[in-house]
Image (cartoon, rainbow, N blue to C red; front, top):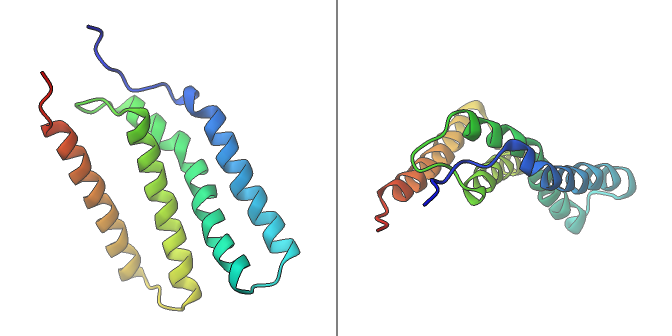
Length: 130
C-alpha cells in the first residue's frame, strides 16, 4: 500500500483561480454596481468568504505540503483550513459593519478557529484504521 501524501500546492491552482475570480471579481462588480441594501450586503459577505478562501488556499496548501503532519493533510483538510480563513474574514467584516469589532474580539475569534481546527486534526489523528 502506498503511503498517503499531502497534495502538491500546484494541484490547487484551478480551484484557486476559480475562487479568486468569482470572489474578487464579484466584489469589484458588487461595489461598483449596487447600493448597500439588504441582498447586496449579504452577497458582499458571501463574496468576501469566497475571495479570502481562494487567496489563502495556495498558502494553506504550501504550509501543509512543506510541513506535513501525521496523518498527512488531504484535499478536504486543506480546503477546510482555507475556508476557516474565509469565514474568519467574513466574520470580521460583519462585525466591523456592526461597529462591534475590536482587537481583543478578533484575537479571540482567531483563537477559537485555531482551536476548532486543532481538535478536528486531533480527531483525524486518533481515528483507528486497520
